[in-house]
Image 1 (cartoon, helix red, strand yellow):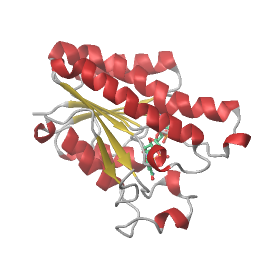
Image 2 (cartoon, rainbow, N blue to C red):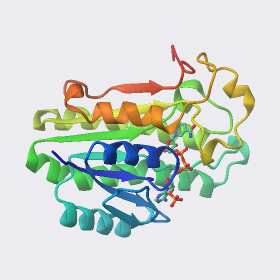
Image 3 (cartoon, rainbow, N blue to C red):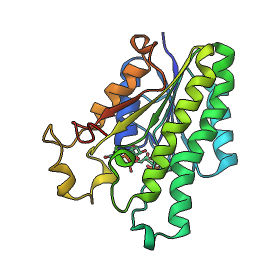
Image 4 (cartoon, rainbow, N blue to C red):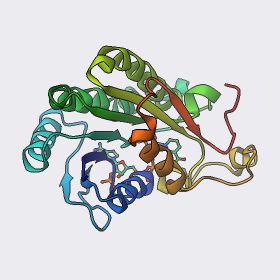
Length: 231
Ligand code: NAP
């Protein structure tokens, strides 16, 4: 049965691969991004800046009106503004927290009502190994991604009785636009000996959204080639 799946940041990188995986499974995918581009097969692509509260709410309402109550939300959109904390501007802190954490809270709150009405839902946040490893220059990013874990676990307890699961996927180094400038030093620390692919992350996300994962909630699933194991 085709489910309505909403994915943020689906225009490129990991989000695009996640969207492609859900499309291949026959789901009806709504893709949100700033540019509004999306991979082939996506039912609806909406251009929206998730840092804009009203525009995000309108985009999600539009998606729900058009394609029905969402069965799955994948909050994937994210940005980096790396700098050492001493040199980090307020804007760089605020932009990252707003896009990576606050917008996820708002999108989740918007989809929860219809999910609760349906007594069914899967919410998946894309975090990172960064808060577990402590990567210099990523104080804002690591704080935002650690925040997603706390958000997911509070929510998981709040909505478990409604048959809604909330989980986190924590990718390591995945080859996308975001990681073009990352040092080879980090790649050299990956036990499996290679950076990941968007499809590796998509496989974990589609699993968490599947019937097979119905007893998993509040979990953090690493997809990192072993990079952050033990943290
Ligand atoms: P990416 O290639 O830079 O793509 C980012 C996506 O997010 C794009 O679709 C972009 O849309 C969208 N986006 C960013 N800011 C937005 C905003 N304000 N409003 C709407 N859409 C916005 O990033 P990626 O590497 O695929 O990363 C995807 C997620 O995985 C992020 O949350 C990232 O933190 C996380 N992650 C990535 C890695 C990695 O190694 N790549 C590792 C750990 C975690 P536009 O195309 O329209 O700009």
